[in-house]
Image: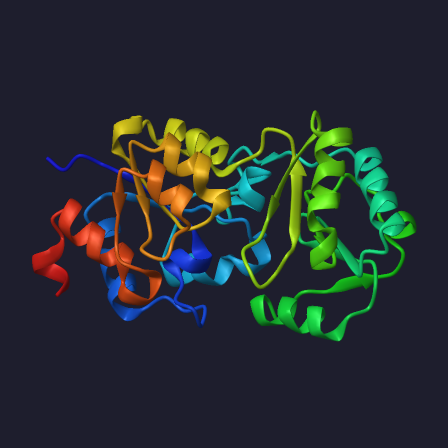
Length: 276
């Protein structure tokens, strides 16, 4: 009898190629793993609206971890217990004030799938539209527009202000928030509520399916995958992953451009003979 594994897939730089697609080989391998009885979940920093296309492409019927664990929900089962953990709006507004003091070019706040942009920026809106063509946005002063606790905030500072801003966030808000910097060329600081990370979501999903830690396989490539890779019994860093992630992973596979997920799963779950 097959031992059911929980397979957690980060999206950007992991499941997705550089042009934001799932390769044919990886798609086939993941679907074979599902057909064999394994449970596949998406665990991403992205919101629901820019993840759901890939969820349906994989043919999933499982919970999804969005916003690095700040939203854990089931896209196709409304009875599933949603966990939404936004940061306090008071903290968010204090951070907005600090950004205004530093004359940060732009700030984005997201309340689940509702997006609020401080300054109109067509290039930024185009990027959001590439991820989800149906997205709608409210543009205007965030201090006035934001009326609810945000799930996530994205700060777009000048490169020279990144460290100053991070130091401020650590000094004044460390008890309430987590903050990370996206990889180059973005220089974007991402903020979520304290204690939120992908491992939190993965733990809840594993408990739901009664899958032990040693049978959790997690794939990632970036800073926001650290806790998940460390938590999983089988943490797998992509070949294109940052070095700190490779250092804590149990395995390093090929890159996202070289079907790294398929390569690993074919071998580890003995899918090879049916997928090649």
